[in-house]
Amino acid sequence: MNRHVAFEAWSAFEGGAHDGTSAAAGELRIAAPSRTREYDDPHRPTEHAGRFEEATWTSPEVTPGFGATEVIVSWNAETPPGTWLEVAVSARLADGTDTGWRVLGRWAETDADIAPTSVGGQDDAVASVAVDTLQLSPGRPALSYRVRVALLRRPGTPATPVVRLLGATASALPHDLPAAPPRPSRPSRPSAGTVIDVPSYSQQVHRGEYPEYDSGGQSWCSPTSVSMVLAHWGRGPAPAEYAWVDEGLKDRFVDHAARHCFDHLYRGAGNWAFNTAYAARFGFRAFVTRLRGLDEAELFVAAGIPLVLSVAFAEDELDGAGYDTQGHLLVLVGIDEHGDVVCNDPASHGEASNDKVRTTYDRAQLERAWIRASGGVTYVIHPPDVALPTPPFPEEPNW
Image (cartoon, rainbow, N blue to C red; front, side, top):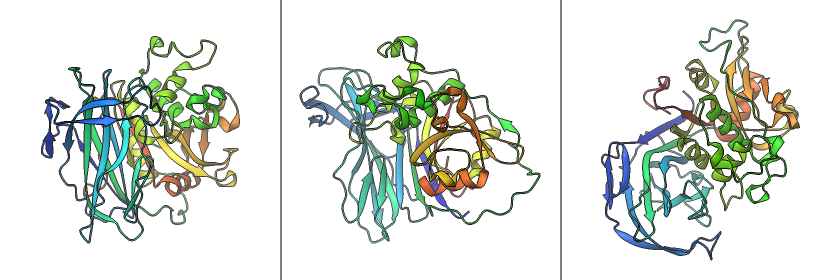
């Protein structure tokens, strides 16, 4: 093991500190609000200004066992009308310095009550927030961290957000791989020759759609990838939920996903935590983690679970892609008999065609594009009754 990653999840919400919240049957709710908060939505100041009742739950302190350079938090929740969530993380350094609370997202299932958003202006000499990730400053890793979720609602409503899962991934990863060893001609891998039947959707068929959600095309790789995984499991939005999408458009459910994954500060639909939160609304357990390499990813393929991977590469670094990208999401659906990687790539080689989505990439090239770009960021989306494989490193489980 040459990459430190440790995933922590809370679903019973035992331990930690309740301040106006209660937990039962795996659901965290507002019990009695402990304070009120004024929130003037910066993205819709005239529509969503107002006062909200607030209650919080703060996790126990987590010590991953190594100096973490980044922490990513994801969640599964529902937010009835008039309610929303704020998720934050605080980390402690070796010298005792505390980063203070850094907000990683203000979120609701829809954009009716708030504009879901990451939060800027939180960077200092100790740490910074890059959209959905707490990044510790170079040479100042964190030895522990805590996660806090605030549940908010309009005064007078009995409604409450319901949180079913909080997940946090701490990592200290080199963002590159050593030279790949020669690949055996007959790899003995449990997933070799396995391809999961995942429908193919192209982000390119959405070019120019809904400029307020970043115009489809090159920018909708993440919600398109998530839509493929949802469709594989036979779930997703009902037609009535995307009735607002122009009837003349293709794969209208992708437009629905893009709108509900959209980060109004980032101005894009690629916020990692927003995408897994979107998937969770359809009954999935969904979270963001990092995998150490394709050997770990193959365990999921063998279990029949497709994964969404975050990659980046120049055009000459991934044979057959036909494009370059500074950040992209695609779906890992299988491993061929040679050990290469079968993907549903929503960029579809620059063509607006669902028929061009399925492709096979060289194993070493794809692994480098994934690890170097994001340190192995992965969306894990699965029905709760479909068991995940056993993590290979129990001392540092990353799912």
